[in-house]
Image (cartoon, rainbow, N blue to C red; front, side, top):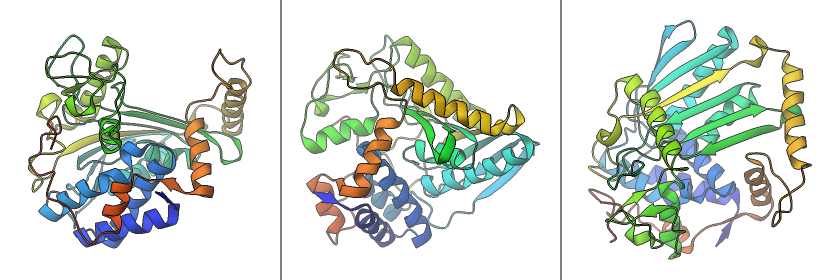
Length: 350
């Protein structure tokens, strides 16, 4: 089913409000989810709405959070999300980080006690739109096996980066520290499609192509991805005094309780290091250089990081977003949720 960006956002917002989220918070969450779908990151788009609605309905997302931003130094702060909607907390925390970086040249803002916040690229692009470099890392619940192991310990623990270029352009990088994010497994399940055998392992630790047999995700590039996952967990969990490693609250567990997740935003003001316009010009030159490199066999062009997502977003603006029928039918239904995520083990099929 192909849906316009405006219509999809309206459907998501309406469903979240019915679940109990205030309209301004629902608008923010819908904006982040549609951003992901428009860029082809369907694992972090509308497919998440029913889960959010059930957690809201059961009380695990605080619909009246008391957000606070406490400065802890000239360029550091801690944002307490009070277990409100993760997208709202992450966006407000990034706004605080941008403000600090404009004054101090750099900012590091720890974001604690939030729920799932969606695609990190949304938040680093906030910084890039203000002429800043944005970096964000976020811990996640244990779904990835350590290098050489068979049982999950770290989460997908994503890393995102964005830098501004000329004329409002930007370069964006957003990755999970696993080969693929868990949402990609959900997307494959929703489409009843197989997955590559490099994505995940089954209960015995063997590679699997069946998304319904996944028992753990594999770290990207083996030991290197494992190390990156550890780094993210320390920066966004241990550093903020939050649960870490396999102690992180499960995405699907007791949905009546908050998740207490952590995130870290880093914002760098280029003007503290170099001429801003020269910086943007060089970022634009980097993008242009990459586009004009000779492509390898089987490729039409070398793309800079984030470019293919940019192109998908432009196409979505013109032609709408392709949404799985089951997800669309849920969004247009009167049902808030189907009671399927509470104390649900995602590694077991329903």
